[in-house]
Amino acid sequence: MKIAKRMENLSPSVTMAITALGRELKAQGRDILSFSAGEPDFDTPQVIKDAAKKAIDDGHTKYTAVEGTIATKQAIINKLKKDHGLDYELGDIVVSNGAKHSLFNLCQLLIEEGDEVIIPAPYWVTYPEQVKFSDGTPVIIETDDSTEFKITAEQLKAAITPNTRALILNTPSNPTGSVYTKEELIAIGKVLEGTDILVWSDEMYEKIMYEGKEFTSAASVSEDMYQRTITINGISKAVAMTGWRYGYIASPKKDLVKAMIKLQGQVTSNVNSITLQAAVTALDGSADADIEMMRVEFEKRRDVAIEQFNAIKGLSCVKPDGAFYLFVNIKEAYDDSLKFASDLLEEKGVAIVPGDAFGLPGYFRFSFATDLASIEEGIRRIKEFVEK
Image (cartoon, helix red, strand yellow):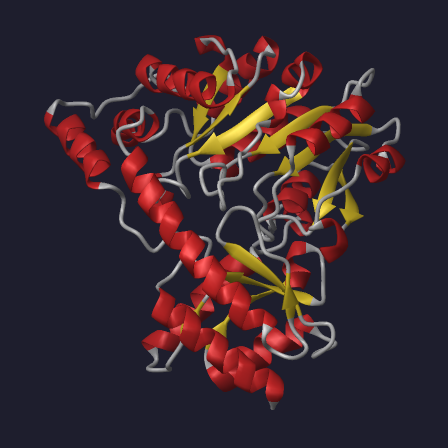
């Protein structure tokens, strides 16, 4: 069977592959501890599940508008206004089947052969793959521990060419948990002034912030940034709704929004109608106590994991300000992060994701979105492995 040539531009998701391998080994009876998945271990809050059940009982089981119901779009508008002071209209919002779908739509709409998209590394594995699938060219800016894995305005300026179409920002970051401050976003915005470069700002982890630090939405730092920023968000991570598949974009560019609705209408149509109803409850503040409970627990886990990792000779880790990942530096202990991950899984039954998957070898991503006992046991096994 002939497979379309465009598929040659697409690589499998390493994070999903390792997670699947861990599950397979566990099913075979192996003692496996997996820290590879980017998924909260908490259940969806009961208030949201109740809203979904009511939606079924009330007959919300039919097709809806491709871009989402008025109720769910209004909930997004209200949330963005309340949290970030941003003003959007119903015609500025498109709801898709997760943020990954939103990003795919953007790539298909905006990127053609010869177009460049600037992506800071380490990056979420999907970013460069979707750009390449759309015949675009990812332009990677490497970072490291010294800048908390954030690009500087100077690095951005040096990477821009006449072919630059967009910059992808992810704050808080997957895989590092790094968060761009308001001042850093302003500096990035200054570099972009006078250009047609768009900012695709993935803010999926915005509610998972630590030590009282505040999150700043890229679109909120100036009028110029508001006009050029496409905010991408959802409810998967902060509200523990990964399987519900709900992401959205917000942009004042009406032509972009109309084009996205046209594309989605020929591909998936609307998001699951029950999810659309439940999402209103997830966004309107009804689940805020549950979100805070999860955030507090994540912070406790982060603090324990950071202390234990930094006590292992040859490993080091920058304390993240958000998300639920650690990006651990292994350069002193191991010269091959892919082999490190493979050997660790085989010898100690611990699944992590090598930094190579995120465009930065010499590190691994450790998700602390699991119980504290498993975290401590996993790090104990990693310590034994490294010291051996």
